[in-house]
Length: 260
Image (cartoon, rainbow, N blue to C red; front, side, top):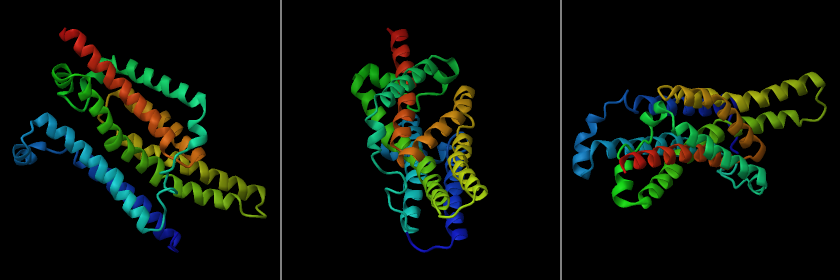
């Protein structure tokens, strides 16, 4: 990693995260008026629902994904040190995949809530597309959701805003000759690193259904801990996506049943 003074490095990481979160919030409806982009929708021959859908994915990809990734690489971090690694030991565990199945079921149960069903899916025309075009439209939606929303989200919060501080705390904790008090301080810094990212990731859920907002706190802690243990965003990414996939699947299936 490049030799950058700690105050500048920390300010760069936190500042980048703050800018990304503020812009993501400011440019996301209803705070942002999408009618401003009506000429773009006309030129692309897409309706308001499709415009809102692609706009949200563009924001997450650029602001939560590419922006912090570029800053991280420029400041000397590798993609791997920022969590873009495979996490094979955890992914080989049957317990992890049982947890993923449970996350899918939890998401499906959440999708049966009227409040959640009124908010999701982000593609407001998804049910009509699946009804007219078949399940491939739903599969395409899940793929876009995974790569353009969940990957940037997990990278920003459980990678960029977490792992550099975990590495610093562990480096301090492993220093030879630490007395018990300083070792405890190093342990506190490690847990501060794990828990800090929960704050911005939860705040970006403001405006979402209350059940989702409340669950963002324990989920953020769990995904952060998994990223710390595995040095990868992948385990949390899979679990986060499983919840979202279960939610959208339950909503779409219920809507298709009502229509039939």
